Length: 162
Length: 441
Image (cartoon, rainbow over all chains, first blue to last red; front, side):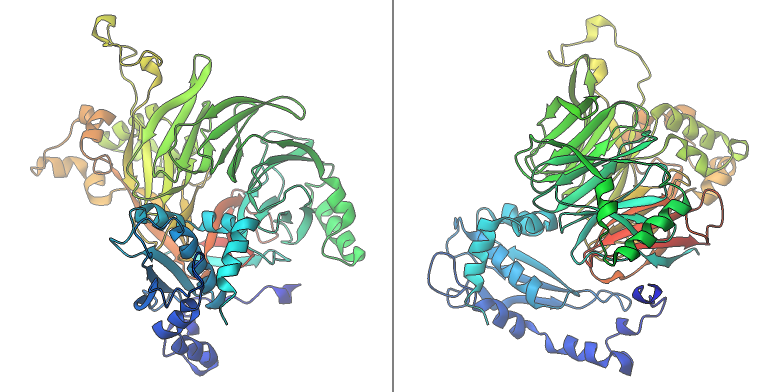
């Protein structure tokens, strides 16, 4: 059973620096690959829950509103993907569901080292603060993903991906 | 500088997110609430899983708590996203001894599977507590009375009284929060409950005559408050022996003793704050001066709490849990950035140790009266302290690249234990692992 316990790298972690040593090359390649365009490609094909159209074609997600933030320190391996979504109308009641769909898509498709922050673009929704807070709440998102009817809605939205 | 060293990863891990862990009040075991609807009980002696509680909840188990002072029989409460709380029981028998834990583990191997049916059968489902409208986020037993508190996304805090075995009665439903209630924590010696909420506030609740009501509102956090916890009453002695203190320090110790245990909180706003009660000097104002501040509440009931200190901000993303050591007064925190950080409270060196000298050097010296909490409150709370908090150890990527949901201090129980009171830190993360860390100096 001792073998099951991973030997934890102490202090200097070779994976921590972007120009790391050769034994972590595969992980670095993976890191290189993910850029804003790739994130856009992952979410632009999500269907709008109301229209038979994709979030990309509706302009709900835009390449310019995707930002990848690198780890904040050499020791950290955590990158952040920040996606701003633009609801089709300022009172769109489905904004939260769209945001949830984008979040779930990215959390499932990206490596776990990415933290996914989905927010409503400033000035585009009256309920932006409320929606942002919900989407940023890990516990609420986790609970939503245990709610069958919400999962069905999100799965339908994501069915057009890949 | 102390370092955090990984001692063990509890085995086997869960294959889904683990939410939180609760060390048993006197046995060397720890219960972990898992999103796969189970609670796993691990031994802190050999770091192996001892038993599993399953079949009671339809969704994630978010939180679990042991009933204190329950010798002879272990009682565990579980709180689930399915909106219900469960009460589970198991005779302790010899399970507390190292030998029994080994036997359990061996029989588990003999059974050939990860889950040993006999072990599972030892846990008896006792009762389900229904009432909340949505996900339960936290459950906790009171240390001073047969009370259980639960809180939920439905914005309410419920207090249940255990009348006799398996008969729980709702004694209060507290509805003043304006958002999900994320965490509840009992005062160690008074019948007082703290709650932390999605509405960015903390509320304190206690019994006013016959009814539970909110006795204090602690505002200041700029995001969801994820976790609150009271300190142990003896934490004050972690600052050192009173003989070595100057007069200012002694006055501060007196203020602290009068105020009682402080509360710590952590938030989505990435800060960790310490709150202290303002002691009431005068029992009551003369009757004539009361302008009937409230018809429903007696004046004496309401309390004032101030933010006394803010811990150094090390975390770069939301802080999910803080845990206050009852043995050493140290604090450990963790969160979305995957770091585990340990902090220590110290006397502020230069000024405090040579307080009298500095005073004569021209700095307006506060006299003892100024140290009374009212004065401190006027000076922004955390500016008034004679102590400071220092981050003394931290580890990055504690659960690989995953978020860490929970940390808690637990008594060390494995063979490597170095002293009677040694503690370990147990962390619980999105990778489904439960890890045990030592703080090495």
